Length: 402
Image (tube, rainbow, N blue to C red; front, side):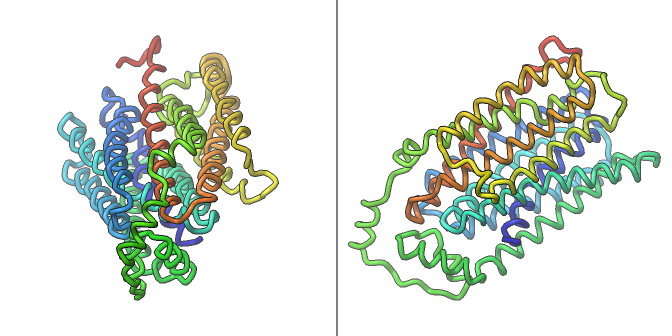
């Protein structure tokens, strides 16, 4: 579970660093809406990559998929650091295009890692997915904490924003390298992981052969006839999706609502009814990240976990009341109400994601659980892309120009 937590942190820390140093990019590129443009660039590449890999999930070795993703994260994060050092932290359209290209590479890496790891963990303990998702949220908390600390330390120094951003990118690069090491050499050799992968191989999964070989286990080749029987018994991607359409809708709508507010709205549309100045957006992002992390541990208390499919749908739809709540609070409310709303946004986002992703794979064989995990993550990414696109609607009637 500790390794899963670190892998989850590494799967998103690079992207969370980009979001959290948004104030630095707003200083360099004040007219280019970085908090809205960069997610809109990142997500199409992530979804396209994940869609291709999910369609061919039974033919792809999960080990090489995840290692490719983490390696690309490492190279891209290091690239952002090098680009800033090479340009001495200057703005301009050329540097902005370079950042956009690297962010697109982040999307490709995310398409490899997120679906690959969730699919891999879906046929193991539900606690593994919960721990991975908690690490996923912890990356945001770490990024926010470091940003607040760096702002406090460097605020009065020359080029303080840039120094904080460099610190972020250096730490992110280290964690990406750590994840490469853990997934390549530690995770496949854990006894419980070998147990689940051997069971998956016995149920016809071909994705795990490279992982088992890395752990020193050679699986016997399946006879042609036996493999044909397993393929016939296996549900297709379409059948799996239809059987779990409500779970897919839950994840899609949860992410649509969250990303239509976070982070663009928090940076550009929260009004002037506050006394925190340049700290305001950072505090809001930090509160979202903290409660997003806390909420991912709530389902571990079984009496607090929603297991009903109808209950999950009702909870998901109820969150849409947050849209008018954020609008009126931004225009007429105080900073305390906005902080509370942002905290609740994070609380419900993390909780619903964990409830759905731990419940959905139950009752299927290992290859189907792997495939379903990939399909559900694809729905999450689709929801995030839709939410980021809808986030632009907040600019209508505001003082910020498109």
